[in-house]
Image (cartoon, rainbow, N blue to C red):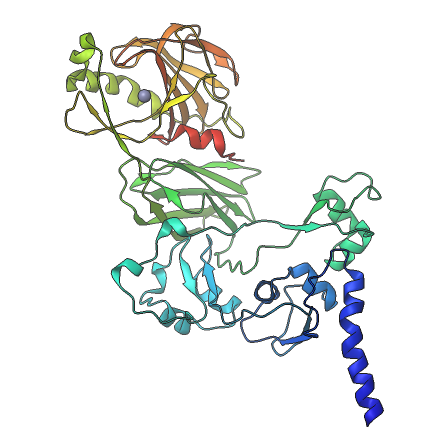
Length: 487
Ligand SMILES: [Zn+2]
């Protein structure tokens, strides 16, 4: 008996060091605690367990010889490297993704719709929305809810979605990594554009294809097989790209914010794109996105997804106009000009000329951001700043922010010498107050092409470029298009 005990003791003592020997990264000093055995509980995933112990899924999978991290069983015993402490008392939350329902989320966590609904005070399961943070387990501290405890949407951080990254360890080969994740060397090499599989190095980050982000619980009607919303949480005064894929050729239509959506269908009718501009002044809240898919045999499938719109939180400013420009504040002047440009900005070109992010329209500093509530000469603040202003000496080149077709090049009262470029798919850019214009209606321009120079024409306080981006008929924050890259 003593010998048997000794053997068990020896195994327990040796295990951690043999595990450590496989790791190329140094292990913290606190290894005296011995080996922890974690028994998988109902609703737990490898991702969640790894998170609780402060280690990576890869580490946990490797130690336990798990090739498919999505396949673990309740009651399964997992070895956890020593020195880590469980924080499993932490509440588990889930951020609702596009295409998920309360039913599919409950299923993926091994719980029931009823218990999820009860935990989150949900009376109607159809009211859940993209970006909503659901309690999967009861909150640790049952604080008495007060109005100020209401969830603050701005603090929600959307999970990294789409791909899983793996960092190559010293001595590893592509074959070994592929085996670990249950995929072929070829799949791994293709996903990472590796032409010579022998040329990988420690520290290199590899995309592991086929690994979905944890807890994605899609529940989409056939033939819809994926739905993405970018960004996950919509913002007043910003654009969003919605992409839906179908497993067969289909056509799509839809509505959002009381507008009929323009849909671009690509890839043999299997990819459907919608660009949405959320108008300034849209009340923060939950709004349904209604989609209709028509299959080739005429059968219709409809889908409603609740999207969240956050307030833009734009500031306010007072503008002192040049003395001889005050007559331009006359509302009839504004209206006449709006009547001229609105039809242009509401046309829809099926062809797409832009790709990726936009370039800046001038090599100049931003002096006034988009969205601010403006008053002129101390008057009532009623107007919104619908573009981004750039300072610049008169004569500084004005550049096309993206490729497209010139659809307006004219002298206007408020906007001065103005150019509008149509980039396709309902995306337009506008460049106001220029000194000289170098383009004409119908010209095709490319990103960075000089279309004019900075001036002080129209309703201005001095020489500057006012740059606008319009999406689906409304002005949106141009700087979002410089920073974000839509596919
Ligand atoms: Zn401006």
